[in-house]
Length: 188
Image (tube, rainbow, N blue to C red; front, side, top):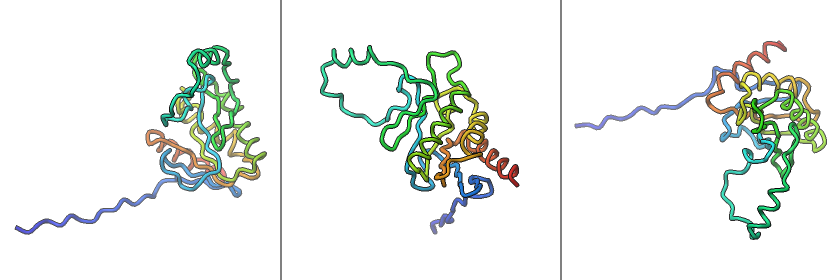
């Protein structure tokens, strides 16, 4: 009996707007684990107590006595909402407040985006990875996060910024593609 040869199947991407270009700026929507290009800085959504943006990689505990560690944590202060905490090539945007009834205030996201723009200018960042701030760990609707991103960073981008990798999980992909297409139609 001859063995059936399975056809060679290949997935071809296309048909939907995953890229938006405007005046020297290119925004590419792609999954968080699939970088479309290399970036100089990565923005991470963070909460006021700096828990949700922690690296998921395990590290051994510090060689500090537990009482000292506990004492330092007792005197720890919550970060100011909207602030950008710099940690090497990672920028932690403090937009989530786990102590509040509504986890994310849109005004805080706007402040964080302004801070990101200022840092891009100051450090001449050309390529940036950015999630949908407020919609990763927070309760901001993804459509509203996209609107804030457009108005707060992309409509008048920093002079140095040339490429933005919009990190969009699969569950928000269609919404992001619709937003990119809408932005393209708006500038026509």
